[in-house]
Length: 148
Image 1 (cartoon, rainbow, N blue to C red):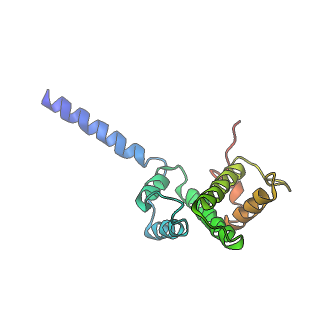
Image 2: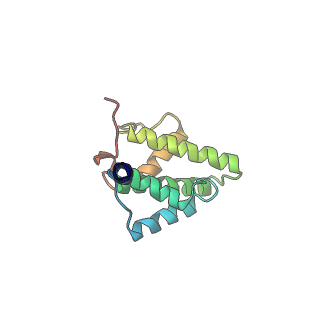
Image 3: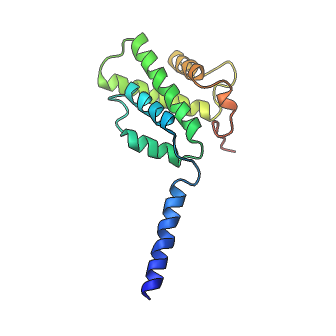
C-alpha cells in the first residue's frame, strides 16, 4: 500500500513538472538578460517580478516569439512616453494598456493592409510595434492567431 502511494505521488509530480515546460523551453542566460532589460523599461508599469515573467514565457508554446513581443511593447512604450512627455502613473498605465491592445490587434491579423487601428494613436502604436518586431514577425508561425 505504501508503495502505491509513493508511485502515485511520483507519477503526479512528474506530470506537473513536465507539463509546466512541455510546450516552451527554458530561456538562456542572454534571453534572461533581455527579460531584465525590457522589465527595466517598464519599471512601475509592469509590476510582475522578473522571475514570474521568465516563468510565464517558458510556459508558452513559443517563448522567443513572446519575448520579442514583450520587447517591442516595452520599446514602443518608452518611445511614446518620451515623444509625448507622458507624465503621471495613470496616464502611463493607460498608454501601456493601449499598447497591449494594439499588440493583440496585430496578433489577430489586424493592420495587415494599409490601415492599422481606428485612431491616429492606434495607427502610431501599431507602426512602432511593427518597427520593433523582427522582419516578417507577423508571418511567423505562432505570432498571429486566428479565431477560425
